[in-house]
Length: 360
Image 1 (cartoon, helix red, strand yellow):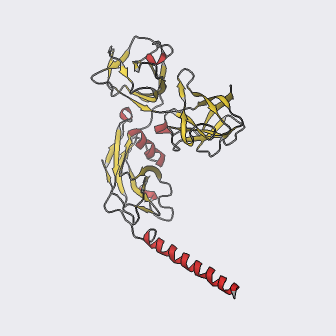
Image 2 (image 1 turned 90 degrees about the vertical axis):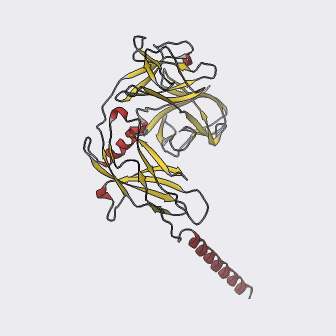
Image 3 (image 1 turned 60 degrees about the horizontal axis):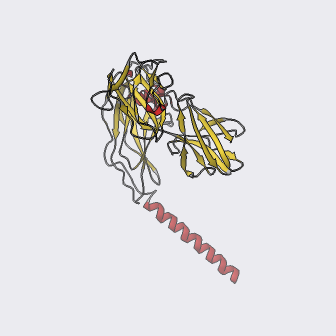
């Protein structure tokens, strides 16, 4: 009898769980959820130009999607060709870009849109159509109705120039050892530097490693003016990605730092310890107290871009690899990280980077 009662209890429990799951499904997954209105593009016809490719070229916006439960909604944007959005493999070749949670728009620079267009197969200097839709995800995924825009991409020029950034971050201004910015597009330069807390945040841009021609601040701190005596000013101590556009005579600084992350350093898996950029060796470095545990590398204290070793016995680290180095004993370590960031916006991040981890 006891055995029979136990069986009834188990059966009743299973029926209750099944009913609960069905009810929950009706509240979320089985509920009808749609985009309440059409998505919008800032322009339906875009001719991209390389000399202003770091400027905004397209803004996609969409309405809020309301699900039956209250939780963050994730959005992504998909781009595809008109020939690839029908049939059993519809949208399988689409370029997908995460927009984030509870955001209702995303902007693309000319360089970003040019890469999307050419990756999908549009020919340079020829108008072609791109189809765009928005993906909305909470407990299940839905899509907006697509819209179509016409884009004329450009053929990216192979560039090899440099400009230089002498300033107080060096200790003493020295154009011969100043940080260099590599030409990533025609007239557009990009580089990296670290400003220590005890250094002044002022600098200039020089066309060569001399003072024959240089740029200082113009009407505002972000304007370049030929042979201006007014210095540019950084926001404060920290590491930055610096961009200078000699076509538009504008420059910008963006907080930018590779860091170590993992159980061997103070922030664990939640917070990276930032590294400093050595502009002469073009290497990110840190000397830190580490404990036994794991270590890998990520950008800007986020998992969006990270590197781990596929083979921890080597100094090669791989993009988006889940592996980590093992720090066998506590102590002071010098850690370096070197990456060939030619142009992350248009080329993406490289598949591999290199590092060293040396106990002092």
